[in-house]
Image 1 (cartoon, helix red, strand yellow):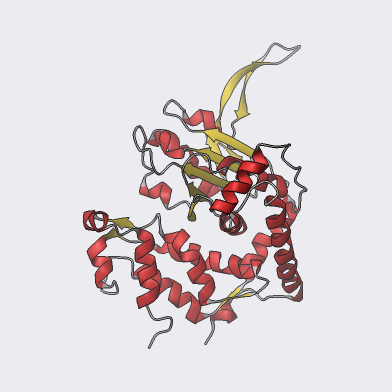
Image 2: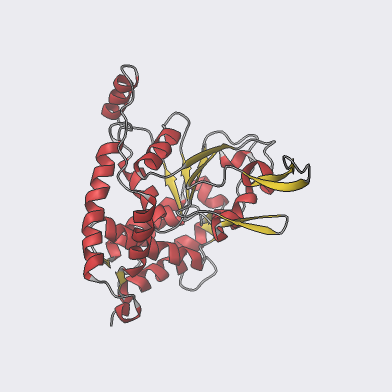
Length: 341
């Protein structure tokens, strides 16, 4: 029997919200294509993370317009956008903010005043996030998980919606500090930003060497985004769909009896329970973008690669055989039955 009984009821207003969201997504795609050629999958995955109150890692070589894309998305959503360039000398206070000694006019009395850092925004782009030491990377942990920053024992809440997007360059690893597993797990998705096709690259070359960039028209605002985040939680997920997601995640753990032989052969460790939560939330948001209030196994399969690719650790044998985490996920799709026999 479906687990819909334990799911918040879907009201008529939620059905209308799903239909409107499909139209909004189409409008956003059309607007963004005026500035960014292609990359529609990247846009969709970023929106999925935002509507699920998650965060993303974007991996791609330099020059693929990642910064322009994220700032354009922020403009379409009427949200504030902050960019942090991560460097080896970046300090935690450069991200969160710091206290300064301030003298009051007239009285001459001195007091400590907190000056907010760039983390206080709606959409935060951490450019080359793996180029700063772990101490500074850890400054993001509390903000990403608890939506607040603690300075000198005082909590400063972050305004929602709050989305952190960290970029990484996959080809230049010298002078980098790989993100620790605890922080990697805080990111809901890892999104691959790939090269454009020939036709797309030709259009990019022509568009960017003549005239000026078009002005984008805002489509959503903060209040509507917060409403969408609530509706996502109400999307129905049947027991068959949720159990499939859990079995997918459990099959990635090489020490488990549920893991196939190829997982035991190529993985050092698999994903934890947070991956199950991310897959099911992503499936709900994916269904909502499609105008549905019932998530399916296809929705689960649509978001699983982005959710798992940074949570699985391949071993030396996988690297020598050219097997990636995406290959592992695809093979799980082929071998794992969608329903229990």
